Length: 178
Image 1: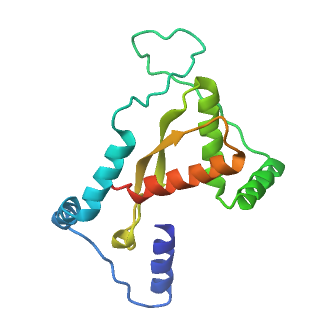
Image 2: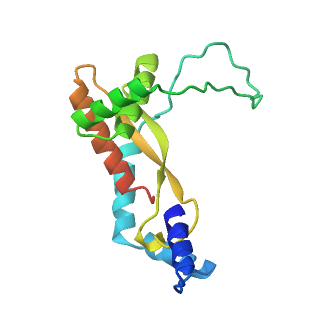
Image 3: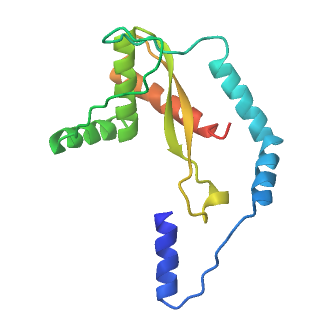
């Protein structure tokens, strides 16, 4: 959105006419309907059914204290930053492993869950940007949450593990509209 707004602002500043593209609600509904009757949609449904059917992927994470049955809706968080030296090392690792920094950080988080729970299979939901070509000229925060199934083996090397992360992320993103 920022790139689009900046481009339109610069075009206006330079005296150019800009074309504001808009869609009616009905056009959005029709666009979604056409997707839901497409072969791409059917292929996506088959993918997710094969990935997620037949197992409970909830994580049995060890708790630091006994939880009450009634959710108090209070939480806590830890906020920290990664120092520059560590960030440089993580970026170098990503480059050496031919993956992205996201893959390294996601893989680290998944490995932490694996080590804490001893579960070899689990899922993690993660936000992704979903701005396809049909929405390239649309201003707005367009994201989706995609589920990534994790399967971890003790015998895997770091290279094998990150390769699996890359494949799983790519597959999940490919079917993110479902």
